[in-house]
Length: 308
Image (cartoon, rainbow, N blue to C red; front, side, top):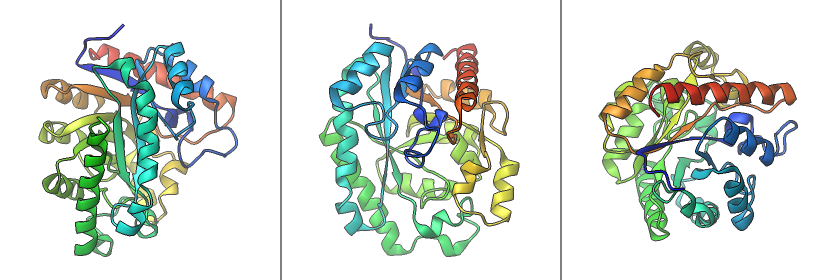
């Protein structure tokens, strides 16, 4: 049955250790394990994860129907500042949209969002969290122009397929800091995915952003982050992989995110759409998965207590 609600709450495979960086690693859970855990925790949807992880086309649709889940979005990294590489990468966006076509009718009032991010570059991956402080990381004029043009083209491509894209800033990429996000919003029509964990780790205030960008936020990833761990890896000038290996992202309430403040700000702003609860995690053993599943059940209760 279609749910006529302003906000639906989803979970994501990345929470259980299944994402683009980990596929093929030992301990990555099966799609069935993830889908069952998400449904049993009371979520109404799930993010796509790596293309094919949850199945493709009718197999994907069947899995979602079986578990009573809608599709909230699908993450795709594209080399926006490199026009030649971007031309060769459009098939990656098309692959995500092809999967959307199979599942879009499951929650027709809340279609999935193509969730665009800048593909990591060696320069930015080597220095996560340092945008705005290390001026050598700033994009030059040609790269900034390419970024704006590439994001605009991606938005057009998504709209031509019937989907409204959102842009996902991420630590260790070329759109990381609050200033870089502001510049992208000023130069394009793209909506923004407020990922509270990445934004917090990059030096932003997610509560303030939920208010300031209220008219542009069209997807939300609720995620907590430990700023002491982020500060330590920044001090050591460690690469982006350390964000995950050092456990910067943590269960809600165990980090520095004002969870209730963000939820209150979204409600006050009249946010409509998906809230995807995430905790970027590395895979492990069965006990690791069980711990993640327990945390996600508690996360769902946290949002329920806040009226979502």
